[in-house]
Amino acid sequence: MTVQVALFIALAAVAIVAAIGLLRAKNAVYAALCLVSNFGVVAVLYILLGAPFLAMVQITVYAGAIMVLFVFVIMLLGAEHLEHEDHLLLQGPLGWLLGLGLAGLVTFAAISANLSAPAELPAEVSANFGSPGSIGHLLLTEYVFPFEVISFLLLAAMVGAVVLTLVQREKKARRSLRNPQQS
Amino acid sequence: MNEVTVIIIDAAIKAAVMALVLLTGFAYMTYAERKVIAGIQVRRGPNRIGPLGLLQPAADGVKLFLKEDMMPTGADKLMFNLAPIITSIPALVIMAVIPVAPDWIVNGYTVRFVVADLNVGVLYLLAIGSIAVYGIVLAGWASDSKYSMMGGLRSTAQVISYELAFGLSMVGPMLLAQSMSLRDIVHAQEARGIWFMFLQPIGFLLFFITGLAELNRAPFDMPEAEQELTAGYFTEYSSMRFGMFFMAEYIKMIAVSGMVVTLYMGGYLGPFVNQFPPLGIAYFSAKVFFLLFTMIWIRGTLPRLRYDQLMSFGWKFALPVAMLNVLATAIVLVYVM
Image (cartoon, rainbow over all chains, first blue to last red):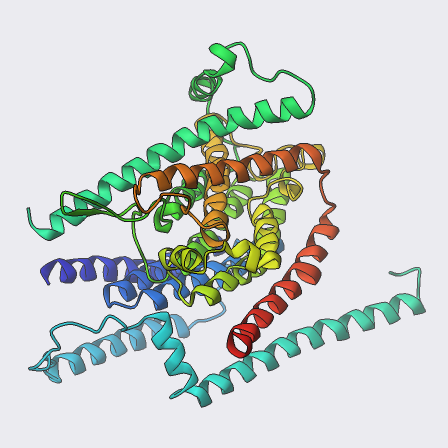
């Protein structure tokens, strides 16, 4: 048990440092990489909690697919150097204040709630816990409605992305037909 | 010794052996590639150092170590140093979930010929594969060179495009075995008495082709198109840093071959393998060698695709076919069998 607690503290520290790095990095590529390491560490936390399926999906989808696209776009646009003109005067300090306030509040709530482990912990989690089969079964039985709603939402977003690029292309094509010299 | 110590020692030994085998494999893959391509082109290939040139990889290694290590002035120092490491680690760890022989009971102790038997092994392969791209992207970006940048962008675009079809073509064996564990997939092929490449020919071909694209191997080696981009994303690297990219590429070839063998070609299965489990290693290696030879053979015979052909093949052909294959397999499994 103590090994797990030590591991958890170490991993949580890395996750927090990575999250702060993401916010404070002067270079967008570094910020993106901080986020990747944060996702990676969270995936290891999932493994500690006995959910390897979730951990692997976290790495494949977030750390792999999504963040690679982010880095790719940052590089493609050459947008790695962030602008440092501070238009925000009050928001910076205010953000710090509110953030610290929230952290304090959460800590206070966690302490005052007097969290303790339930008296009777199951001796061992069942072998099926968090396995791909059981997650799939839950998704298609108990949570089938939210699952379908989300898939519909994602489909709509996908169609939206395609439609947006199509409209722009058509306009460009028309413009270049009207004044061929300009394009 | 208590149980935890045994598990840790067991895993450490297996990991060390795996790393050693992969590194040796890398050294002799470079030799094999040069020899086989030389044979295809009616040349002799390396033949000066040692008998039949067999010590050539050692000489190459010494050369790489002794070369001057250079870094472009405008390079991002941290990322330039990190990129080769980020590239080689996924290549070295990806084989950890692949079983190379059945369990072997010696003096009451069960030897498992796999570093880590995960119940989500297939997903582990995908996860590590998707992380591996970062090394390429970062190398291209950190070098502060147009050639590297173009090579890096091309590699990333290619790997992202082919990853979807690559992942989808792993679903066929998963559905047939009804498990994501690679051991279960091999067992399912044993139980059915047939390799999945015969039950899933489309999935097998797609997996191999998209695997080549993921590896940036010929005919999908656009990122390294010598004529246009010199060496692509690692143009600015020299000495051992270059060596690490080189190593990662060859080890990834071995890893992808191992994946194809496990998912589609029966893994370690072969005659008498259950009577004497270490035999499995020989069968597994033989199948991997065959696939590696095929990859070199393809490089020696096929011209490179044009970039737009490569992209439209990935998105307009490989991806829809992989999706239809998954759909068809699922329908057949549920309604026919």
